[in-house]
Amino acid sequence: MARIKPQALLQQSKKKKAPRSISVPKIALYSVVTVVMVFFLFATYRHWSQRSIMQTEEGTSNFQVEDDVLDSKKSDVPRYAIFNTSKGLITAELFKEGSPEIVDEFIAA
Image 1 (cartoon, rainbow, N blue to C red):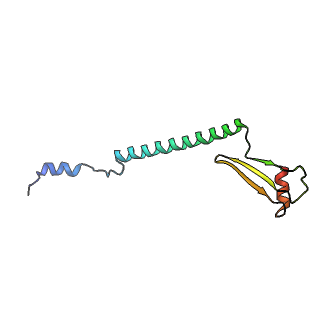
Image 2: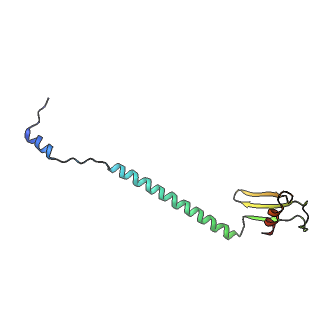
C-alpha cells in the first residue's frame, strides 16, 4: 500500500470539497428542454391565432340552417342543419316533435 506524505495529506485535508449538485450537463439538458417547450407553445399559439383569422376572413360561420319548406308552423316537415367543420360538412335533421322549443330557438338564431 502506498503511503501518502504527511505534507500532501495535510494539503488534501485542507481543501474544501463542495458537493456538485448541479453539473454542466444538467444545466445544458434543462436549457434544451425549456427551449423546446417554449418553441412548441409559440408554434401552437401561432397556429390557433392564424386559424381563427382565416375563418373570419372566409366569412364562414360554424353552422347554417336551411328550410326545405317555407311554412315553419308544420311540425312534420323535417328541418336540416348543416354544420361546416374543419373535417367537412355535417348534416343533422331536426325533429320538432322531440323538443319543439329547442328546434324553434335553433331555427330563430
